[in-house]
Length: 267
Image 1 (cartoon, rainbow, N blue to C red):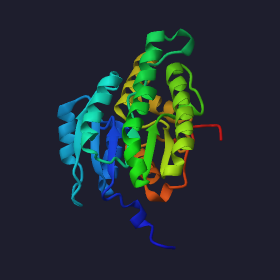
Image 2: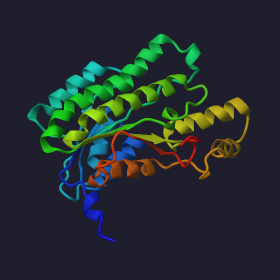
Image 3: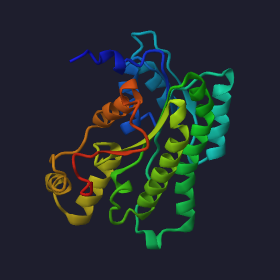
């Protein structure tokens, strides 16, 4: 078998990673930097961004920086990114990622919450893609990767807004993939399952308080529906993203890729 390591070398590739001061976004930034990419972090907290940028791997001469922006304010995000790219810096990899919508059933969801989620997820993804796609076309290399959820394939109870947004993003991404593939640009969605992040810790604590069960009992209950019988580590999602971002994945375009330990029951 031929050596595949050069294809996972992202040296000289510039990547924007959104929501990158914690959870999956942070893990993805670390993995891409370890493979040689120059990382531009995006999040709201400048102090955390500065610490994160300073801690990323730079042994191969990588240069990391950040943009302070709030995905709840799409126009502000657009202004900040446009200003950042004004020097014609080419972005090769865009990782669209932000926090999930509020829980609750779809039939009782507030219109304002649906509108906010639509702006935070789909509109911001769209604005960021528009900002980087012309540079990708010029170099005939682009990877637009949206981190969504397995709910895109299989809606989960009491997460109506989330499932709605994930479905919308899947169809938007498929359309973009059809339009941009001819330019060497792929558009794909990564669908994580249940991942050990801060948000999961809150969910576990909520279950403990609601049911009176011990932490061990709640953990067992939450993992019982996962065939691999455990939660994902954030870096496991990051490695899947890194593969899709690499030249090895040049012929993977327009798909929803579950990285969920088998929790999604549909094909």
